[in-house]
Length: 279
Image 1 (cartoon, rainbow, N blue to C red):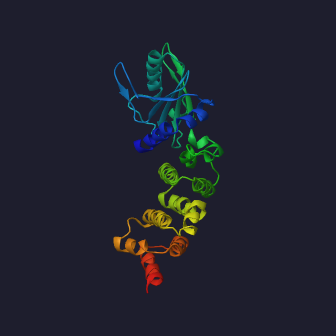
Image 2 (image 1 turned 45 degrees about the vertical axis):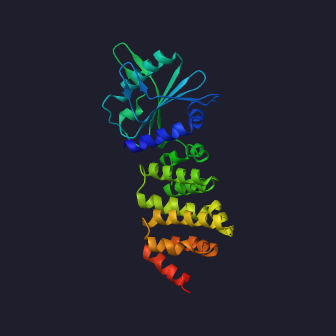
Image 3 (image 1 turned 90 degrees about the horizontal axis):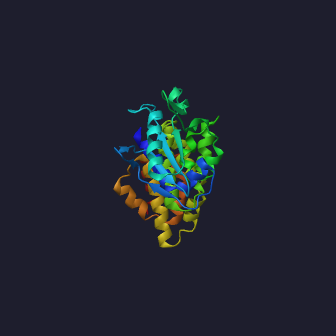
């Protein structure tokens, strides 16, 4: 389960300002990502992120599993002491549980020892409203984990928001991050059906690329985009089929982009090419 926690760490360090706005409700002027190793004796956790603003440190701990070699509450005390001693600023600590559980660990917000009590915040993603996550590219990959009465409706909304992202690389990365995290809650085939196909159907950017594809560079862009979608749906496509697709005109790519959603097997793609490219 560490891959899910680490993906969240990547998001927090890629979009620190958005996570600070979400969790601290403030607009930071400066942000520094601190090393996630603290002495005296180093302790490390791949899913830990320390974000320092002007006068505060935000310590994020992402948890998929409730199991931990050192109890989570004790770990939070340990980090708090080390951070306070090293940086001498207030520390806000937030544990974010990604996968729904009824275990009391996910509902515990303090460490209680014989003479010490330490408090920290806990966020359970399955209790969060989806709207704030849908409206923010940085938080969008977490949206599948939020509260919903209709999984198809939620994933369709997410697909629509992804399709609106204008930058191609950002859109592709966000779609990949979202699909991975959605796997904590939904079956893979269900995600593929409702997320990826909706992205293809709703993407204004993709349609625009196809419609304007008279120029050689834009035709190549359309080809690469469609190739990625086909690989995601059917696995790696045979090189001979790819070469036949490579010479398609923009109009043919547009037609294939509309019709491949109805294909059930890669052989349907071969049959389509045979029918539409034969001289």
